[in-house]
Length: 98
Image 1 (tube, rainbow, N blue to C red):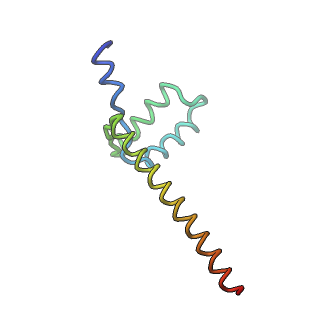
Image 2 (cartoon, rainbow, N blue to C red):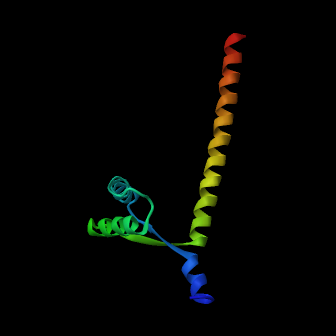
Image 3 (tube, helix red, strand yellow):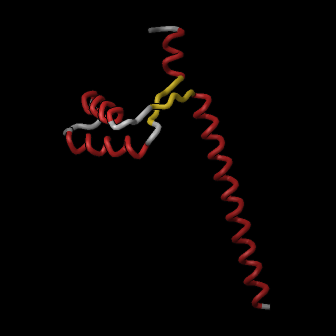
């Protein structure tokens, strides 16, 4: 499992397509098992999630980085808009005082 196979294995990750359903089973596992995380509890979560119709989505490192970059740009735009709104509200208050 060394070499190319290991690189392929690490480059992709399976994530739950329905995070809320998965989180529900994780909460149940935490209540059921005294130690979290452990292999038995994780296997139980995966089994229950799949029995409930949950599926996993394959994601790659490139996809994750792209999504992170998009989120970062979105936060920056929201911060800029927030700064402009604050400046606009200050200028409106100044106009009302004059």
